Structure formats: structure tokens, C-alpha cells
Length: 370
Image 1 (cartoon, rainbow, N blue to C red):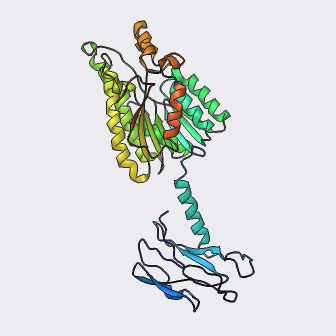
Image 2: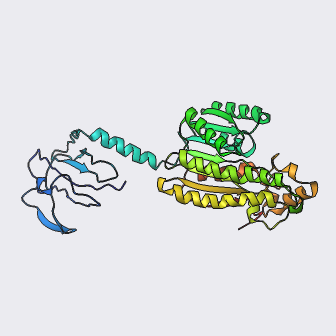
Image 3: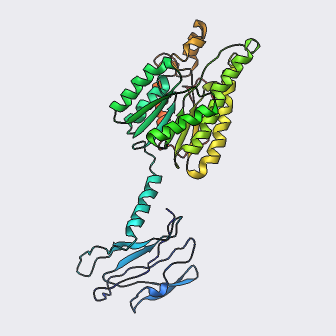
């Protein structure tokens, strides 16, 4: 919390006993104490010591004291009774409630909330959260106790999946809503976040799983295909991070799903991996810019996943290769990355893994490295 503690008053209510003692100590980070040290009532037998060029007294000997607290923090000073020292007979009288004790206790509660990185009770937005990896992430957040989850889906063709996911989230005890949008414009991304805030409040967690694969030689890639891959994989990711910075609560978590092809030396994915590559730098920049508010920003690059997202772009020979390419392929269900193996990493980075920020992590069983 960064608080400064100072004993500002002792009120003796019983005879002084030589065998009991309390120590008055002062540490000061900033500012002038609001109560003079001269107001501290001390027993005649105390000795003077020097600390930080200030004269204070030690071996204070009251039998029954109420200790008052002054906090020099990022908030106005609070003074209130917080502790009662037992009297000579062993009783413990309740501390008197200072006029601003309630305010101080409220401040402490807010400070504790700032350091609570659990998913329980949090709100989340998941772009691409209707199905596949995004849908599984949404369900996992609900299972971890998330209070409310907004999911995004791209088109009417995915509405049924979105409805199914929303029903599952509600069954798990979370509030849930779904929004349809084409996120390839800044205006659409701004609206998605605005709709989310209106429906469930500012998100604590924002996850972008949106992406599209194109496997094609560079010499055969059209301008329209290039622009589409840019809009979905790079532009949408940039403006998702922008809106996250504007809307996510302090101490929030932001995550983007990219690709393990960022660590590959391979042909044919220039327009896909090439448009995911900028997200690695977007992530670093956003983490640096948002870090002052306690927000962590990361990216995860899965290997080829055993989902409908993967197979349309690959022929039979390529599928067979990918199923054996990872160092741990033979231990996975299909030789590919299982979405279930990505979810724990997402869970970590949006909760107790908050200290990691600005990183792009390849989670792929040894398919590629960086």
C-alpha cells in the first residue's frame, strides 16, 4: 500500500506497569505528519533515540493504549483507531471508532481489490468468443467464477454457436451477452466495447481470438486478399488493443491470440503470419503504455489447432506433416495443438500471471520456437 505509520496518541487508562512496553516508531515516505510528535503521551521512564534525524521515544509503557494511524498515500490523509492494546488485567477493549475509520477501511478494501488477480467476480470481453478456442475460453472463465462475459461473433452464420455459448455461460452462473460485428473497422471495434460497457460494465479482461488463415504463394496473392488479411489479423488487433486501453479497468488483463508461425521458416503463409507479426510489437507497445495503470498485455501463439479453423487451408499432405511436426505431437490427441491445452495458459495470463507483460508466448508442443 505504501502507507506511512505514525503513533499520534496514547491514552492511558490504567496504572503504568514496568513490565509492559510498546514501541513508538516512525517511518515517513512523504509529506509532513498531520499530528505533532509532542502530542504522544510517554511514560517518564522512556529513553530517547535517534531515527532519520528525528527524535522519538522508545519503551513506551502504557497499560492500555489506542493506537492511531496516519497514512501518507495517494489519497487524502485518514486518521482512525485501528488497534487496542490489552490492559494490565488482560482485557481487550474495543477500539474507539474515529470519525474517518470507515473511510480508511473502504480505502483498504480498494487497495486489496487492486491486488486481487483472481478471475472470480471479474467481467470479460472475448472477441471471437462464440466457438472453437474463443468459446472454450469463455466457458473456462465462467467456470472460474467470472461475473459477466460478453462474446463477439462475426456473422449470422455463427449466431447459433454464439447462442449456445451464451446459454452455457449463464448455466455456469455468469451474466452473458453476445454481439455480432465485422471488426475490420475502427468504428466497429469502438462500438463493440461501448456495447460491452453498457451491458456488463467495463471489462477487467479483454481477449481477442479473431483471425483468418490464408495459405497461398506470394506470387498468387491478390491485393484484395492481402487487404483482407491485413484488416482481420493486424488492423482489428491494433484497434482491439486501442479500445482495451480506453475501456479496460485498471489492473486489467489484455490478451491476443496470434500464431506459432511467427517462429517458423516456411513458405505460403506470408499474408497470414505476416499480418500476425505486427501484433507482437503492438503487444509490447501496449504493455508499456498501459503498464502505469497496472494492465498487463500479452499474446499467445498456438500451434496448428485441431479445429475447423485449421483444416480448410491445408491439403492432406500438409495436414499429415503438421500432425507430426511438434516435438510432443505423439502425446496429443490428433498430433496438433489441442484447444484444451491453450486454455490454461490463457487462464494464467488473465489472473495470477499478471507479472508477465509485453510477451508473445508460443504454446505449441515444440512445433516452432523463437
